[in-house]
Length: 130
Ligand code: SF4
Ligand code: SF4
Image (spheres, rainbow, N blue to C red):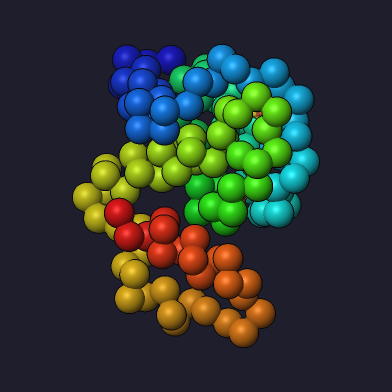
């Protein structure tokens, strides 16, 4: 882990307020994730990768944008680890690094289609309006 990555890991922990050490690696968060197939790294992997300080891989992964922010992983976790908060924190790090939003809020309507669940629309506003 480089120093820079160590700082990033500390930032993700600070922003999210998550204690990765509580994770017992049961995988229930990933088992319940509706975006599992779309995610290169799954919620339980976010927890272990943040624990190991592998933040850059997470920041470069499309997983942070394919997470629906539905919080099912938070509901399912028996240890209250809250993986979605880590994913949110990694997204915030990317957005702050870019100095702007990944996608402007007013560009969201163009990406909507009639089959898109309402949850995705709500989570898009949550994700893209930092
Ligand atoms: S918040 Fe993201 S990672 Fe958690 S269950 Fe929903 S889609 Fe999956
Ligand atoms: S459900 Fe909770 S305890 Fe289990 S792997 Fe996911 S974060 Fe860890």
